[in-house]
Image (cartoon, rainbow, N blue to C red):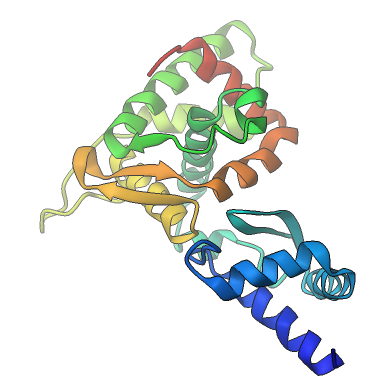
Length: 240
């Protein structure tokens, strides 16, 4: 195979990997390139070299497709301005905790993250809001006993969440973006745009199912103490 042909195949595979909506089961070219990635050393080596040059990391490459991660200095790294513009410090703290809470709801234990069968989990905007309030109430109560619980940023985040109105409409009838309902709805929609969730209905403010890539991405959070703390608090709440 000519180097130009190999380079074109690597570029095609990378294009599939960067598209969160690409699925090998629905796209034969993607499926074939994945098979070759696993069996052909030259293609695999060149593909991984290109990833390194772009500041990307391969997190998984299985039947569900490739899942990529980005280094902090990568052009592909998600930054706050990419997530949502014009956020106050309090907004950023709340949105960060919302994302941690959603991840911990779906995967409350290390076992649930490691289990390849634990891929699909269903959640909705209204249920996440109720859970978020319960979670922050639990964290606040524990924080009153242990003043060193969590980081200062995390403590500010759960206090800020509890001070927010759950819901409020704008004059034109839309959900106000700074309420808990508005923030959770935005967070879930962002995860859907990233190919991590799939919206299945409009029930309860929007109902979603997790996709395989979300489990892989959340697995990377396991080393962070803040996520472990939220996971632990989520388990004390039992079935939600």
